[in-house]
Image 1 (cartoon, rainbow, N blue to C red):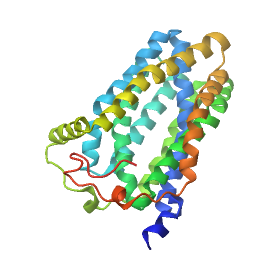
Image 2: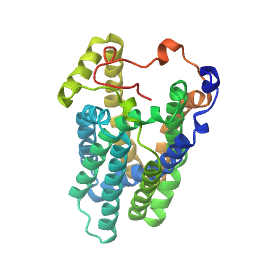
Image 3: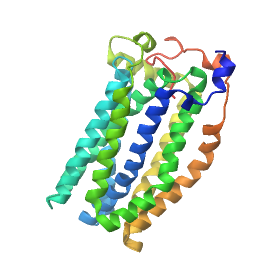
Length: 308
């Protein structure tokens, strides 16, 4: 099939991609129960925005610190296996937290463990997904495939938090976390049914993982545009994501006293992002050949493929 014909096909025409997208979509819906339940649970136990902030930091620090390690390992080992392991870890710790709530034995420290495990899992699962996706779709479809995944996350963030808040109000946080734990089984099942990427597509990497990370950092530092982008993203996350995560939960708890109001506020935050992502998800863009050619080790040391 010609490059033009391939680029005119939506990524969902690939059954493997469709299976992964379906499993990830169900898991994303479950995640919204977690994102509403965890802050609400922390505020119920402590009543402190400081405690909520430290638990959020407990997830963010390992996510940031280990992301490059996760990327280096994803280039050397099965990214599909890494994703299965990360999803399994999340399912186990969320189910365990749910059980602690049911038995009325939950303290604050298990929530720090839960957040830390989620941060570690993200650090390995995110780069693994970026490495795995190009083996499921044609290179010309990567932009649309990536946009579809991101748009789906935004759609679930838009429509699921309010019902999740109502569910928590009616049945409690234990059942909400249990639903999230079960949702991970769908992405695990999808990945289990899919093949590993061909070894030939992983590329040749430096044998030393540390050297691979150093090469990647050097590449980012040598590219002014990429360095600027990383800086802007870091500043925006520091100035917006953190205050929004903590502030919205605290306001909902103190001013409205209802998890349903918290879920509705989360949905409102997702609306703006969704507006920008949807056009890309439904478009069929055929990038210039110069942009879709396979990167070489010289052009991007430490990484064997483009991010999706």
